[in-house]
Image (tube, rainbow, N blue to C red):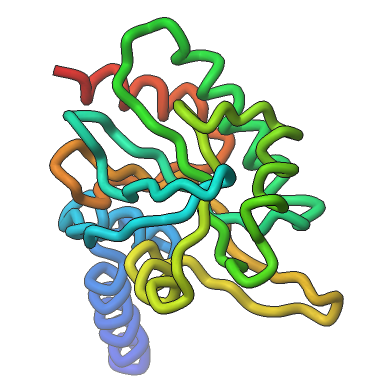
Length: 199
């Protein structure tokens, strides 16, 4: 009888071992969790990319003068997830204003052809992005795919001329590395991170 169960037990043990390795010691059970864990363990160098903001000004993606940059990826006519993410960004901005925290918020469009500076300004006005602490910007088309790959952003065109996409807050630490990922509504965690990250 025991001999009949031995292959099942061995298969279960082997399967458990594979699962343990595949999920980094059971710490990452989803691809999103795996991505976040990978970024924490191996921060990724961010290239020197200039974006165009809603006032047609060039703005650097990389942190300046010791600041931390928070990045979310959006397209301005998105009617659901981008609006929710923008409200969360606004809450982070409101929590940090006047606290002396060196932070810049960037909502980066992955639809740069349609998201002109004028269109980005409409989106920015709707969410009270001031163009200083928080601005809306777009990359050049030649830089877009590299940025989406770096930050693991998936963008899939849908049947309504919009996009399905994942949403998160991506942290570029003051040393110029993509070093953490948070849910868009993780306001408390982001504020706590920024408090710890300041010198």
